Each structure stands twice: as C-alpha cells, then as structure tokens.
Image (cartoon, rainbow, N blue to C red):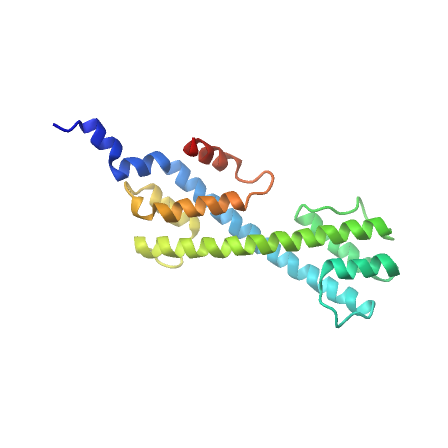
Length: 206
C-alpha cells in the first residue's frame, strides 16, 4: 500500500504550492509591475535628457555627432559649460528625480569635476535603462505565455495575472515561466528593490 503522505509530497500541486504560496505569487505580480513602472519612468526621463543633450550639442556646434553623454560631456570639460548651464541644470533635476547623482543645490556654474560627474550619472541612467528594457521585454514575453496558457485576456495586468495564479491549486505546468520571471526580477535588482521577494527566493534555493 502506498503511503498517502508520500503521494501528497510528490504530487505536482504540492510542489507548486511549496515553491509559490499565494502571498508570494501576489508579491511577484507587484514586483513585476514595479519593474514595468521603473522601465517606463526611466524611458521618459531618458528621452527628456536626450532633448537636453540635443540642445547642448546644437549650442556647441556638434549637431551631427551622436548624442552619447560621454562624448558631449568630454567636450564640455574641454570647452567649458557656461553657455549650457541651463540645460545642465535641467539634466541634474531629471537625474535627481530618478535617484542618480547631481551636484548639491542649484549650480550657476558647473566646474570641470561637476561636468564629469554629471556625465557619468547620465551614462549610468542610459545603461540602466538599456539593461532594464531588455528584461522588461523578456518579462512581457513570459507574461503573454502565462496568459495564453491560462486563457487570460491580453489586458490583464501583471498583478491580475499573479493574483489569479494565487487562487489556483496547481499551476505546475507554467512553473518554468514563473521561475524565469523570478530570475528576471533578481537580475533587475537595484539597491532597496525586492528585498522581501529575494528573501523568499533565497529560502527556496537552500
């Protein structure tokens, strides 16, 4: 006679619920939406910075050059930044909104060191956006696969998707998609992000 306790332990639904309790699934949905929101916010601010870079390039007669922060700010270090201080102040404000470095207070004249550090901050934002953009696209692919498998409508939000999964007894057939989503969340981590979720993931892997 087969031990019923062993049967319960090896049943797919038992494995699924152990890895992904309902509260954890809801947290995953919340964190996915946080990544999507951060991706959108970085994208908006990146575009705003690009407009300021275009204005700076025009003022220093570099209209034909690519809007690469390190190149433009190297020229500003060499030529001085007095004529574009207004644009630099706008960029500093945008960076501050996203939590990146900017000079303290309002700066009327940007020193060579300030220009250098500001250029580094811009490049960091651009690099972070590029990395996050790739992961956000991968998350969208995983979400669409889950929606298709669970026969959800396209307009269901990430939170809605995982809230639905949280009320389902066994979703082991899409565990690979959920595992991949958690891995993408870990990759998208920045200081202060998803600490509670990472705590769960660490426990799962032990």
